[in-house]
Length: 202
Image (cartoon, rainbow, N blue to C red; front, top):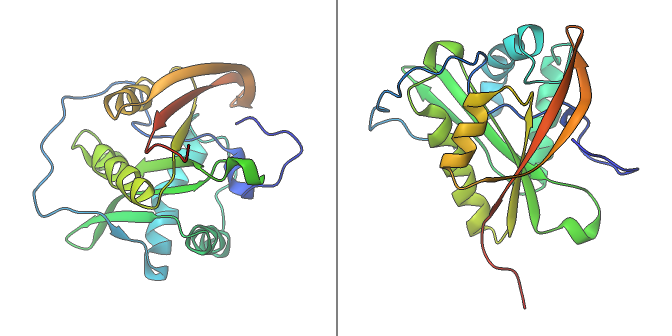
């Protein structure tokens, strides 16, 4: 993620992952009709942290290297809520399958119409269309709220699942930042993708 002397949510130093933790993407299985994204509550925080932890500890798509505390995850959720942006979860039989949220792309005023998304799906539930379900819901909510552009910053240019999911959701690749991250001793790129939401004022 490109930052130039600006303030933003501290956790956005890590790159967005939308898709699989590995690069082997199985055929998509249909999502059961009763599954639907709902707003995240404080009671979801332990499960959200538990789902995110493997991405931090074992995957290159998150640029964080230490699992955030439960308190830190709560602060992140509150920051998204305070900005009037969506943080959504999908559950099945009481189990968290995935979550997604949007944040302001940058803090400076002229970026007011642009948001950035993040989506995470539990390893056992990837390939079921959960990521697309969540991403579409975040896009819809941000569009209804009047935002004009959505950006995705995909951690690790080899993250084929994330790139493909964004492309299918209408995102286009607009640039690659080469070697801006390093994790597990490997230099990592980030891929910038963008999608129009709704037209801005003339």
